[in-house]
Image 1 (tube, rainbow, N blue to C red):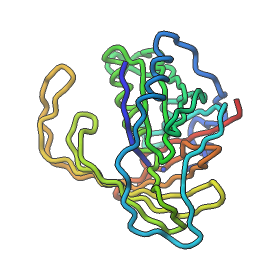
Image 2 (cartoon, rainbow, N blue to C red; image 1 turned 90 degrees about the vertical axis):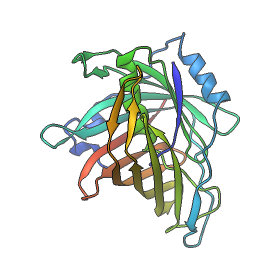
Image 3 (tube, helix red, strand yellow; image 1 turned 60 degrees about the horizontal axis):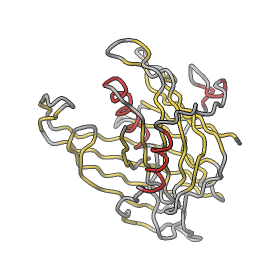
Length: 278
């Protein structure tokens, strides 16, 4: 059992997918008493916001502070969408979430369940992964799971990486349409040391609804990457560029629906989120 603190940033109509999100019912995560209370406590007590973003342009008037203040007692289903072997976007995995608690730092904690997570090494279903997801007032993301073996850790790693880049970080100061801000850091990403820079721009703001873009730059120097068992793999230097478009409601839909595009402008991934009253 472990917890990761992440950051993030992307929109689409799910009806165009091979498996529509609308056909997937809302389901509350199953209780798992030995893991979830501890993970919720980590969300409530151990939550931390990342370093502040740097505002490059405050945007047009009127300007106002942006904060995630989610409505309580809501359910959500999050579809992780990727290209299949034929280059078509298909729903790969679905997370079921339910609001659970609010912490003293303004964070909101959701229990989630990922069912039928595929263990690609064994080519079979590894069973559900249970966990807790926390959202801070400025977009900091905490994800904790009950992964207990190699198959679960592989699924967890993919999950943390993909969700981590789907949540926008918001500035503390008031901004308006056209505002642009940057989050930059260096550190380890899925075992690799990288320099990371994410540039956000506020495209539209209507009430609590936002449309944003995010340009992500990841620079990885040549290095030896160590696996969990200590084995080393040499990787060459690489520079990756992605663009994301996202829609989010700071109150009613705090997890955004997102579209990811590669450097050539080709849509390569989506995260689609639907919400319902509990």
